[in-house]
Length: 376
Image (cartoon, rainbow, N blue to C red; front, side, top):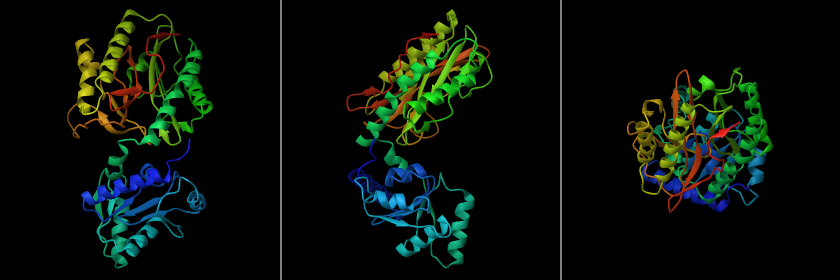
């Protein structure tokens, strides 16, 4: 799929400058690679962007300078972008750019800059007589990314859609006697075959008692009849992540498996139905948590109900209980996962997850793999 157009990038730049103005920041040094990609279409593994009210300066080394310049002659060109090479180091060039632009109080992404890096900036600027006061800022670009534009939604919808044939192929590979790691290898192979750049994360293949560990990875355990098997995987398409979890039964499921599965599915569907514009994120979490509590599984649900999805596998908003950061009011264009679970040590667990778009009317479920209990 094509990269965001110049017009879409210009709209993002306008919103960025509004955000900088609202926070009274004269410049932002962007070091988080997903944020750089969002603002410039540069998807390389290195780069620094200096953004001001009137200029965007992208600092890249020789691996990327030609590709960035070539893109500037395409419909995906980044408006008003100045490209600077890196003859010495990224941070050396960034200090020079700030000095040239006359910036005095540049903001930096506090969540993405180490103490050591900030210290180097400060010491080096002082040694060179540069009057720079680095100001920490959080969530400036992430606050823009939380609501997806039309280009992003198109990619996320396609990324979710492609998980269906992947899941079908993986289900066909399951049988007693297969190792968890072999199943993970099938997932990764099928993701590549479906056209994804890479997995969104290391696939989770958790069988039997391992399914009681929410973030277990694939190990040496051999699938056995009677197992609950949690499969959690996703793929990156044009930079954007998809995420899906299904729990299947290896052989005839026990009554306990059916009970827990039904409770988790009911909780997930209640949470999805709660999604609509104007609703706080905590309400969605509560819809799932209340049903699991009524089923006697409240203590077995040990994580939040979901998270935002986009250029990163975990973004805002978080669908979580009150506490910590303030709840987010859902808005059209947000994309979230909905993934309640129940985990019983020594027995196993169940999790069911789908990707969901907040729409003007309510919601759209982007993933299309069946949710009924599947037996293999």
